[in-house]
Image 1: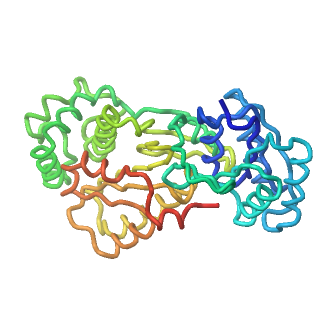
Image 2: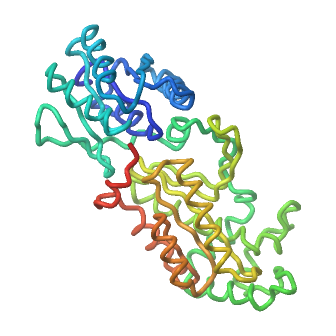
Length: 369
C-alpha cells in the first residue's frame, strides 16, 4: 500500500528515481504528477515517462512550470497542486535542479507534506518530516524500463551468433587462467596471417562451431567478438548468485527517440537500479593502441551519459597488457574501469568489485539533478 495516493516529481535528465519510486511496492502511488518546464526536451521526457508509467498501471498527469531555476513560480506550481490535492501528495525531491529540490522541501514544510530523496546507493531518506527511517528501493525495474524512461528503445538483445559460439566461450571462461593468455598470445603471433582455427590451442579449437557461421567466420570472431562474449558470459554467471544484478543485455542495438539516432553497446548491466556499460576493444591489430584507447574512453563516456546519466559506470576491456598512466587517469576521471590482459583472467572478481552500490561522496556529488 502506498503512503499517499499521489507522488509529485520533477522531470529532468535523470529519470530513474521517478520510475523506481513509483514502482516500489511500499511507495507505489495511484497517480504520479510530473512537473516539467516548457523546453521541448523536458516536455518530451515528461511525455515518455507518462507513457511508461501508464503502461505499468499508474495514472500520470503532466504539469508545466515556467522555469527550473526560479523559486517563486515553482512554489506557485506546488501551491496550486496542494490546493487541489491537499495532503494526498508526497513529493519526490530527487530529480530536477537544486532550486526544484528546495521548492519541494519548502512546500512540504509549509503544508506539512512528506518529501523524500533517493540517494545514489538507492536508499530513500525522508527530508520532511525529519525521520531517521530509511527505505531501500526495490530492484523492480529492468533494462527495458530503464532505457524507455530515457527515451531509448531496445531493437536487439543478443550478441551475434552467441548460441553458436557459447560452447567455445564456456570452455574459455572455465579454464580462463591458462587459456586466456594462450589465446591472446596466439592472436598476436598470427595477426599478420588473420588467425583462424588451426592456430588455436586444440582445447579451444575443438569447441569452435562447425560449420563456421557464414556471417561471422572464425577469423573475424577471433579478432574481437570472443572478448564481447567472454564478459557477457561472466556477467551471466554472476547473475545466478547475485540478485542485485537485475538484468543483462548483450549486443544491444538501441534507438534514441530523443536524439533520433541508433547505437550499439556490447553489454549493459542493471545493478541495484543503476546502469553499467561495458565495451570491448581487442586492439591486437592496432598501431598506436594507447591513443585509440583514449578515444574509446571519450566515446564510452559520452555513451554512458546518453544511456544512463552521470552516475552510470563504464568498463572498457582490452587485450593490451600495459596501459599508460595518462590512459588510466583519463578513464578514472570519467568513471570508467579499464581491464587489460592481466585482469581478464580475473574477470569474475573484477566485475563483482565493480558492481557495487555508489556509496562514495564522489558519486553523490556527481549525481545529476
